[in-house]
Image (cartoon, rainbow, N blue to C red; front, side, top):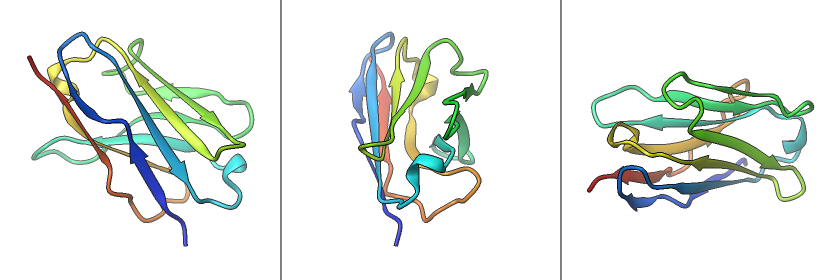
Length: 115
């Protein structure tokens, strides 16, 4: 059974930074495209960043482009999201998953950007 465990969220002031981590118990993690999603109150869950399995190519939602960086460590089966220049509109619960496989969602990690 696949488990996705997100961590690293918290309360940060506007302009601040956070680094999220997602440990994935996926046996063939290294060949999976992985992504970070977020869901703000009253809104649908959205994909904000993804990273491919082989080339490591990345894609970002326009709202986070230039501020967020996704990366992965296949040996640790972990995907990261470095978030810089955070804005209040980045406040959400953040989740990781494999966009082309859609495993059961983890508990997510809360990110709150507020002064």
